[in-house]
Amino acid sequence: MTKKAFQDFYPENMSHCYGCGRLNEHGLHIQSHWEGEESVCHFKPHSYHTAMPGFVYGGLIASLIDCHSTGTAAAAAYRAANREMDTNPPLRYVTAALHVDFLKPTPMDTLLELRGKVAEIKGRKVVISVDLNADGQTCAKGQVVAVQAPETFFTATK
Amino acid sequence: MTKKAFQDFYPENMSHCYGCGRLNEHGLHIQSHWEGEESVCHFKPHSYHTAMPGFVYGGLIASLIDCHSTGTAAAAAYRAANREMDTNPPLRYVTAALHVDFLKPTPMDTLLELRGKVAEIKGRKVVISVDLNADGQTCAKGQVVAVQAPETFFTATK
Image 1 (tube, each protein chain N blue to C red):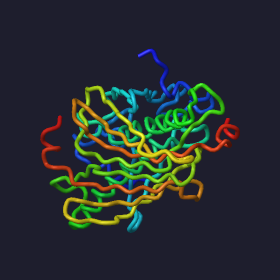
Image 2 (image 1 turned 90 degrees about the vertical axis):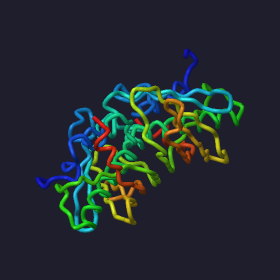
Image 3 (image 1 turned 90 degrees about the horizontal axis):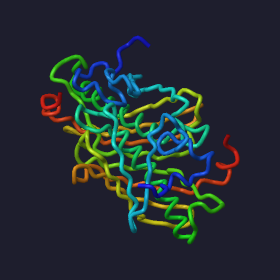
Image 4 (image 1 turned 120 degrees about the vertical axis):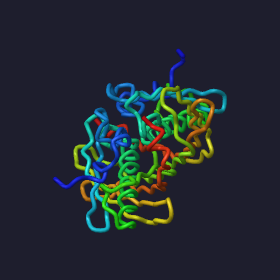
């Protein structure tokens, strides 16, 4: 896919996140795109991202849901404001609350698909619901309450 | 600390977890111990475990809460059965639900402390509440619903 991901639009000083920062050389490089009203992320775990042998580590699943959701929250906020993601001031979201229900073990050795929906968008808050699918089955469901990062996050950090 | 951690007692085929498996060479090697009625885990993030610069990545925090809680659940189940953790059959717990409230940004460059409490233990289910502290402040609170892993997890996996 050549279209830029939500995360490609993050300002440079917000692009060091272990989960989704394009500038974090050790990170997961989670990337998200719109597909109509849903946001989609694909991720192939490394062999060491395991829980029980054969199944994906729950902390990785939580990480994917987290970054995919904050990215979706930002993209949704730009959409709601009729703005393109490359316009200033930047809109970035941080996680206030993360919930994951692990419905069944998530198999390794397959491409994971996360599909996000905007459940609520109001003021500085965006709530995102996410399904994590593998081999055609929904293995986990997540919900993230994301809040817009204050201006100080852009100016006070190095 | 020379005393064995909860995770040191996990059977070999359950010790590959990216979060807490002693046999996962790429993993986080999360370790938990009792301190009276509370379970404690200390963890020093790597510099690349960042979210915004200066703050710890939320997905790492979720991972720490997850593995510390399933470890605590196992240890609590042994305690409830008046069994030592090196006795058979092994008791291992998996996460059914994970919830994290991020109260404030968690600072980098400091040792994180997780303190877990058994909120509920009933049948195959154990609920663990966790505070994540840094520099004397509680930065995140977590709750994990852990369920005892079925026997097939021990026998069917490689």
